[in-house]
Image (cartoon, rainbow, N blue to C red; front, side, top):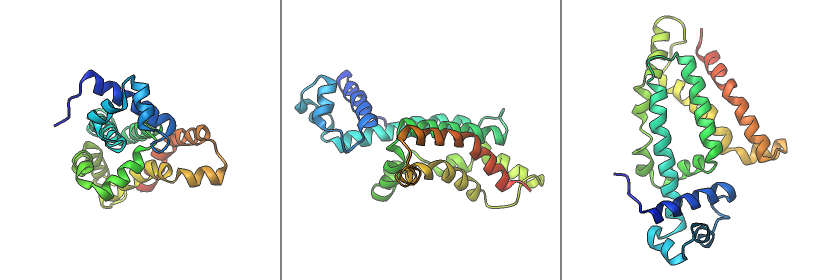
Length: 202
C-alpha cells in the first residue's frame, strides 16, 4: 500500500527531489533539504529518518508512477509494434533524463533489496503485454526472426538503459557536457526503434 503523507511530508519530498536532481544524491545534505522545505532538521528526520530513506521513497515512487504509464504503452491495442518501440524509447529516455539517478538506484536496489523493486517492476507486465504478442504474431507471419521474446525485450531495455548507466565513461571518452550527453540520448529515441526492427526482421 502506498504511504500517505501530510502537506509537510509532501513539501519535504518535493524539495528533496529538486535538490537530488540538481545536485545529485551525494552532494545534497539533509540540512539543505530542510532549508528548502522551510522546516527544521529535526522535523525532516521525524518524517523520513534519513536522507537515504527519503531518496529511496522518491525513487520508488518515480518507478511506480512511470511503470503504470508504460502499461498503457505496452498494451495499447491501437498502436503497431514499431509505434510501441518509438513510444517506449521516448518515454524511458525522457524519464531517465529527468531522474538521472534512477538507473543506478534500480541496479543497487536489485542487488541489495530486490523485493522492493521487483514488486514494482513486474516481468510479467512486459512479457504478457500486447507488445510481445505483436512480436510473436510477426514471427508466426514470417515477418520477424524466430527467437525467445525475452531477448527481444532485453535488447530494447539494454539499448535504452545501458548508456545512462555507463554515462561517466561515455562523457569522459567523448568529452561531453551533461547537456551534450542528454542531446545524444535524445537522438537515440529515433535510432533505437530502427535498430530493434533491424535485429528482428527477416
